Structure formats: C-alpha cells, structure tokens
Image (cartoon, rainbow, N blue to C red; front, top):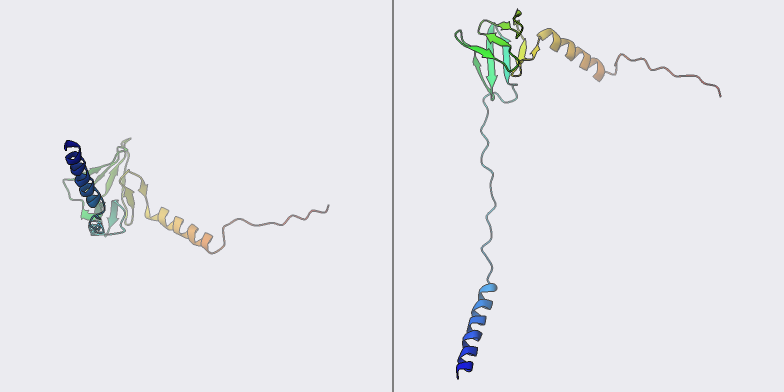
Length: 140
C-alpha cells in the first residue's frame, strides 16, 4: 500500500511540474533610453574665446563670460585673465585678440592661424594642392 501511495504522490508531483514548465513568461517591454540633456550651445567647442572684446569660456557646452576676479588655469600651466591677458607657464605674457581661441588643454589658436588653415583647406578642396604633377617620359 505504501508503494502505491508513493507512486501516486510522485505522479501528481510530476504532473504539477510539467504543467508549470509549459507556461510562457510575460513578454518583455522594450527598453527606452533615458532622454539626453539638451546642451545650451550645441556644437561649440569647450575652451576660451575672445569675442566682441570679452573673454568667453565654454565648459561642458555652457558658455559664460570670464569675470574680473576669476582666472582660468590650464593643465600646461597657462593662465587666462578676464581682460584677455594670457600668462604662459614660462612667465611670458600676450593679449588675446578678437577671434583667438584657447582649448581647455591650453593650446592657443589665433584668428590668423584659423584663416590660414581655412584658406589651405579651400585650396585643397578646389584641386589646387600646391603640388605639380609631372609626367616622366621614358623610352625603353
């Protein structure tokens, strides 16, 4: 009698497990990425720029004016004051001119350098790379 009751219990248990294994889990919802923050000045490089006689600083996409008591220091030892005076790590000073840009690493790009680079890029795009192509005439 014990054997029969044990077999019945095992059979009922097997039926219960097989019934649970055949049910499907609920479908997953599609994950939506979190919204990205909208930057105030999208596309503007981070750094310091002399614009309309004011020193403007852009960090993390947000631009503000560098005010009098503040001095911006860079990793290479260069410092920029609110009036546009640049103090290099070796102690030399220079004045930012309109359109001059300094990256947050401390690399200065003047407006003249940008104009020269733009003119060189236009010349290359126009097919005038400055290199003359010469055909060699070999008789063999």
